[in-house]
Amino acid sequence: MTAMAYPALATLLAVFLYSVLMMNAGRCRGKYGIAAPAVTGHEGYERAYRTQMNTLEHMMVFLPALWLFAYTVDATWAFGLGLLWIAGRIAYAIAYLKNPKKRGPGLIVAFITQAILLLGALYGVALLFVK
Image 1 (cartoon, helix red, strand yellow):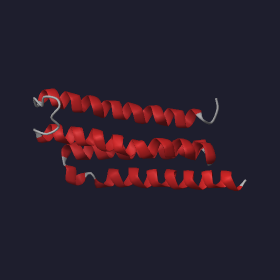
Image 2: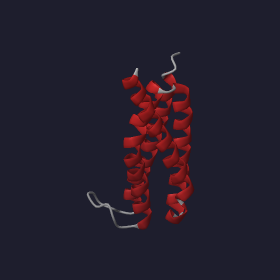
Image 3: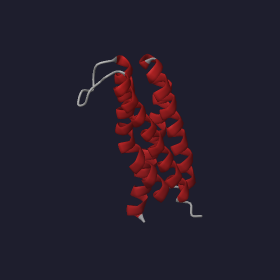
Image 4: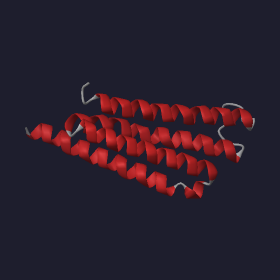
């Protein structure tokens, strides 16, 4: 097994998490009678939708940062940080669905992890130009 299997697994887990959040938003759309294309209506649906969309917004930074970090710094560390990001996003989703005001800890864990991956990737790519 190559070291790149680890960030690949983190990627699959992140996509699986997003898929669960997407299905939950769809389930809530039906449960609360929110007809497409509306994205507002019942607070339960709006929480599910925002949890899904916020995760998607963050994945646009997380996934490239994860892979660039894995390639230029260390794949095993990228995997560990990827798992921490996923744990933060799960905590964020659970809290946001119950009470949006309690989403902070999960968001902070995921954001800091994402920042470490991004800054590490920036450093790693910069080293490629120096060598």
